[in-house]
Length: 461
Image (cartoon, rainbow, N blue to C red):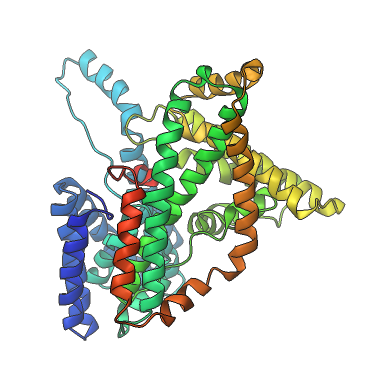
């Protein structure tokens, strides 16, 4: 089950009614904490997930108290090191398991332990690091209940966005008022269109192309990388729209995670628009501590590459870790692109915006090949097929689809400044008509959608 399922919709609406029956934050926070853990235990059906989140919350709470009272830098470093070690242990256990198994067999010990990667561990680990740093700098330490609610907050635990502790705790401690009904409806509709309609159809279309690239002509393979770029964007941003709507329904505001990244005119601009909460985290807790851009130019390039390679490695598949090299290369390619931007900027080199968007979209789509495929061999096979299959005949539909991608991006660039009018339009619809209109839109949407709702792509990170 996932957040788009009918079961979750019914469950959430029941909780929503009980939650707003209480007005004081202390009661709402207790209900929210209980609901977070109920989802971990019942909806996601895994006791291990709840135990890991609960144990980790205790760890964060006690280290936060020590940081608040002693303010020793070595306590901060120890807390961050232990948090990262915990994340690395679970994330890279599949890579280490074969080595452990070999050692245990050599020692004559019966070793047969498998660990699942806990739901959302990456996101609440990063969130806890913001709490450690802010507490070290003087932020009021949170109570155990506040920490547990913050780290298990169901709209963000699966795939983010990464919410800064100061930003969240301020909202958790104040009285909340329900509002933004039009924005909530707009976000829910956007989420359904992006995920259920666009991303799922694109996923069905791209699956055979990525599975057997040698069977397709070069333009279809290039189009496949374009389609995956659009699929990932719609899938992930659709998820963010959905959880932002959930948070607003409970009186919380989440930070934006996307700002039209497919219209970015260079790689640095892309990362200012794509997965913005992760970009900010990498900037504030990796890039700037390394020295940021305050160093010699060669050191700046080194800092950029370290930040991007680490960001790439973080995306390693949590099931078997087989694509670590792929993700490291993906991060390195983006790092190189950002370094090129830094190198050219002082020279006054500036491309026309439409050409910058064209080149950036193509480069990002090329890089997604390493992100999508399960191994470096598969990625190289795909690239080799692009190079070798240029002689294969290209169908008329492929040319139409290729042109259609660029036409849609051009249209999106034109209509995007007016996107906020969707909320205004919903507000103009009479309250009695809204349920009927919404029902008709949902019927049309699900009639056009493919069967089933696959999990979110970023949930595996």
